[in-house]
Image (cartoon, rainbow, N blue to C red):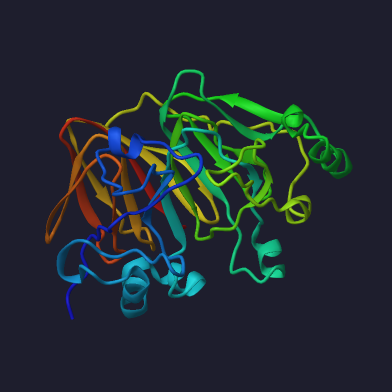
Length: 328
């Protein structure tokens, strides 16, 4: 059996009614014959979208198959005991030329009641924001379910939403049950639970190329939404520290840090961590060095460091920003 090493994966690209071109124009990734790329899935354990290894001895193998084989050596003993053979996180890039639908995701409890494996808590790191870009994060005031249902019927949902201006490097934590929507011109890296369940509430009255409106999920959404005023839209963190690790978000489903390197090398010791580590470049290129070799990661790419590997070095060849993701 081959020895575990840091794994890279082949992205999967998805055309969306609201999708843009930045994955190609800013990140130099080829999404083929698609008209646009609304989402690039970089790492996924979702059934039917299981990521395929693109480097080394395991090239061509599916991620979840490797978890079945290597268990805790790959993902961490506690992570394996908790999540089993399905990789617990979905790592995406989302590029909206137009706004996404106003939507909400269930938490674990509601998901289980509906026959789903788990809910969907997520976070966004803004990789590129056009001038004037905004997103929706919760409500601008407390709202009753009855009031919101009436607003849906009268197409006045927009009047109740909390709009937040967005800039590069902003971070937003979106727990399950929080109503939200990414706005046009707001390309983000998304870290989320492994789930593709979204309940659409409002889709800006748009139609697709066939003259059809997308399906809404009003009943499911009304049973899911937390009808409270948003009070903590943006995550506050130290944006000035360089050549070190700064914490962004920590929740039961993932911890995400940012590492800003300016033509420097940072050594990382993960010996106290019982988890895989994902390193995703959100700007610039870097080289990951470990005892068995080196791997180069470009902007918009990521690499999965197995739990078995505890010491790595990260070298930035230019100004580089890296998301570091694991589970504790």
